[in-house]
Amino acid sequence: MVKPPSKKTHSQPEEMHLNITSLIDVLTILLVFLLKSYSAEPEGAVTISSELELPTSASSLKINENTTMVTVTKSAILVDNKAKVATIGPDWKVDGVSADNPFAIPALIDELNEIAEKKKYIADNNPAFEFDGRIVIQADRQMPSRVLASVLYSVGQAGFDKIQLLAINKFE
Image (cartoon, rainbow, N blue to C red; front, side, top):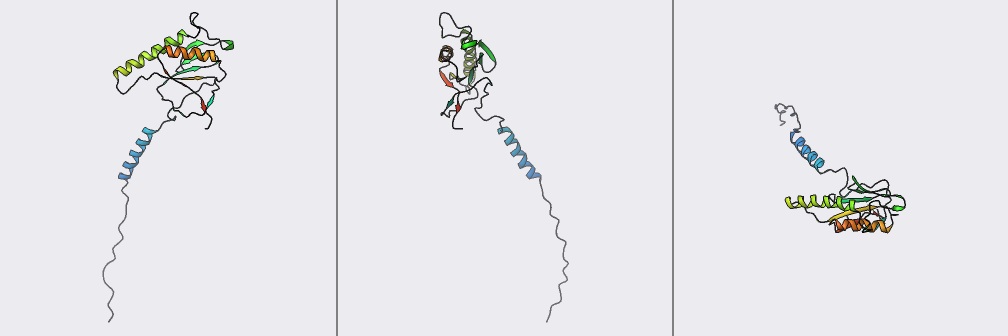
């Protein structure tokens, strides 16, 4: 005996729709996270003066972005790439060197003392900040050692005792 075909009505397939509200929420959170963690410059990036030809080194130490920077170009000594504290003449002669002490650059010492006082004041009032006496010196590879000695002496007189010399990593 053969059964007659069923008389059930075939229902129309349900329309499927995608609820994108939760998807948009997730994408918004990801977008905010990525924008907040994005930096245009890599951490420890340093702006190098166009007047400088830096020496090379095999060291791969990183530089803290809050570190004070002294730049010695062929024509001037700058602090944090802003304040010009001394002029360098022909043959690397530094103007303003003390007559009593040929290693001291008084204008550099004064500028760095002011920066050190500000950083110490911030460190005293903000436990998240610490003044550690770090400074970075970037200078041309052709700079004579007497100029470097004067800069190092002046930096030390201002209370910066952890000195890094900026160089280009020869392995990169």
